[in-house]
Image 1: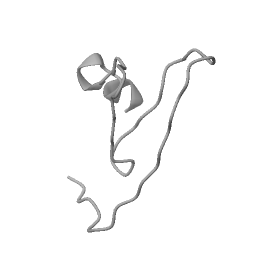
Image 2 (image 1 turned 180 degrees about the vertical axis):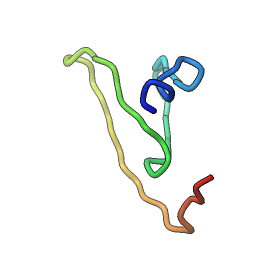
Image 3 (image 1 turned 120 degrees about the vertical axis):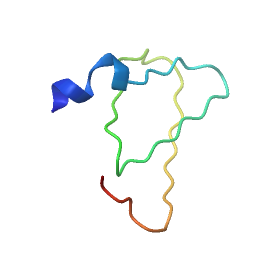
Image 4 (image 1 turned 90 degrees about the vertical axis):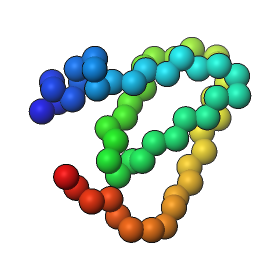
Length: 57
């Protein structure tokens, strides 16, 4: 299953630019990160929403 979902056609890679904001749904998204420069400033924020849970296909 992991080999299938990691195929290039299913992977989104973001190229960061100043002012970018990236949002994903942790309940239905497998996410990760690549290495980054430890001297680079990173700002991470977490927010939660309320509502109906997602419906599995």
